[in-house]
Amino acid sequence: MYKEKKDIDWKNLGFSYMSTDKRYVSHYKDGAWDEGALVEDDTVNINECAGILQYCQECFEGLKAYTTKKGEVVTFRADLNAKRIHDSAKYLEMPAFDEDRFIEAVESVLRANYAWIPPYGSGATFYIRPYEFASGPVIGVKPSDEYQFRIFGMPVGPYFKGGIKPLNICISKFDRAAKHGTGHIKAGLNYAMSLYAITDAHEHGYAMSLHAYMDAKARGFDENMYLDSATRTYVEETGGANFIFVTKDNEVVTPKSDTILPSVTRRSLLYVAEHYLGLKVCERAINVNELKDFEEAGLCGTAAVISPVGRIVTEEGKEILLPSGMEGMGKITKKLYDTLTGIQLGDIEAPEGWIKKVM
Image 1 (cartoon, rainbow, N blue to C red):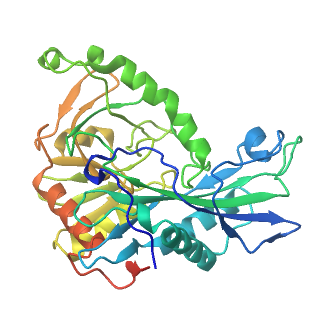
Image 2: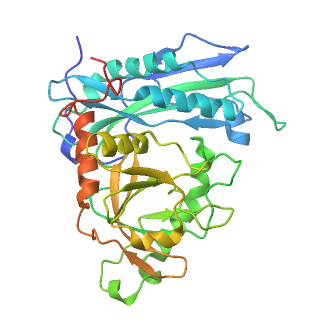
């Protein structure tokens, strides 16, 4: 029924683009979406004056499919991704793609690319990228009349190569998003704005650090920590992930702000912490001065699940070394990671509605 698996070194995959057999495409024109179809062509042809090229009318999602121990292919909370891209599109004055059709389209892409879905135990997953953009020509500043909704997918390895190793991050001098802006939606323009800051962090690297780390490997910072743009006092997120912190009393804390993305992974981790691990959880404003008091820290998102943070460098060049260290995950972070990935892979019973079998 399905093609044989591709001859791929699953255990050594990186996190990079790979063209697979088919992708889903639907066009919006004359006030309605067409039926959509699976196509083999991995290129996009649009007008030179398309709204995406002129005024960045675009939003996207990221989710994964997994192969369980039973050999079943499943998705993880795809309904939340459907809702989030729906909300993002509406905020950008784009026609929202129906949430039920979103789920159906995701599953059709998985069935069409079964041969590319990594097997259980390989450490790899199938990353799915739905996105919508303005394809119609627009020269005046206004919403387009035509759009495309697309989904492609590919097998991927860990987001951070070399395994789970604590990250070295810096507090950015740049702002990612402003209050009443677009920080709470998953728009490409938010990520474009973070690229310069990421490059700046990599270029500075350990030149900004204290002498205790001068004998460490000559590498740059792994990520930026953005603060709120209004007061530059409270922790927000990175360019592509939310933060999660653990106190010395094992309370799991995440930043609360209306300018950060409502992460599916973060919400799932908070549920796991409270209902599976019996920990106290809290979403609240986190003052930058509190960073030195946390026991553990991590970045969380679809791509990486959780990546532990071992070191934070402030704008003044002062370093904060998390007690959990630079060798591996902290105790609580590791339990959160193991439990959530266990749920995703079918090794641990999931809350109702989180996992959906596709094939």
